Length: 402
Image (tube, rainbow, N blue to C red; front, top):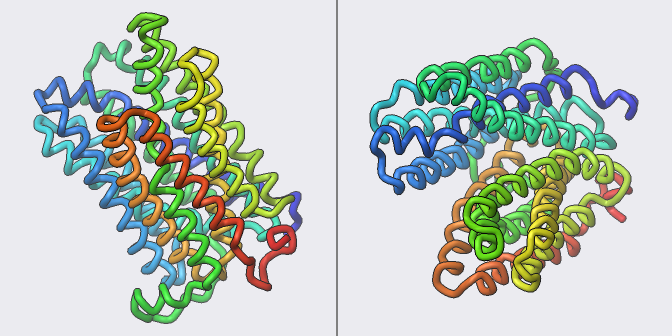
């Protein structure tokens, strides 16, 4: 396969599916806090809904990766996962109590968890190792465009529908089911040899030592990689004394848009660079950018320009992190084990996402921003150091083993 032909129908189909699916559930996520308040749910329900859903999704990724490596065809599982996510998201509109939203969100995120390692394995199988970076960068870029379009759509739909939430949630079916259709129609799955049926523990032991060290670095970084929505809260708090509450809130939203634009822009750039330079160096650089972001929070005065730099570093480091983690993971493990490898990495990332924001938030509340974001910076540096010490296996591409 020519490197010039990396953007084939499968890569395009997966990228478009990511855009439409993210568009669908970002509409719902944007209005979910207001919807919960409207049905009389306490604030704590939002955290419970997000926590349970993310936890279930993380372990579904592990199970899906283990199971689908044993199948002749992975694609039907991906289609089912997209359909379940779309139906679960749309069913928010049927809820009259918070526990019903919890069930619907959990079902939607279960579908999301099942499809994630399958989608990544299909993407890796559609291109050569020399173009992993561009393929995964393109998919991340399209996903982030959905994250930009989704909230904007929610804003306009709320006004156009006069806050009729059931109809708004029902409309999320259009992009959600479009994503499933794109996978079904455009993605072309290659013939593959399923792995033999062995236990989960044995499958884990078969993953190469370099991959296990790589995942340890991912996990170490992930324990400090807090959700960047915390940056919005930080910006509002720090900018309110100088700008006033209303202008600070508006500035925080504009800064988060900057964050997502940087994320979408640098996802493909990072992937392209990963095809030219050692991926582990670039990924370590992304982790160090996260550390730099945390140090800027601690050291710089709370001005609008300082926060512009912080949000720029935040969006850029996430783009590099997600693109290069995926492409380096694909490079370290044989294709027949890709489902398991992506599933394990996604579970490690999910556990890190769950604990990191809780820990950073607790440290922030108890000891202030210097301790909270100092903790994040230290783990980012530690994760980068572990990646830089990684020795690439003999079969890896020369550009990544430099």
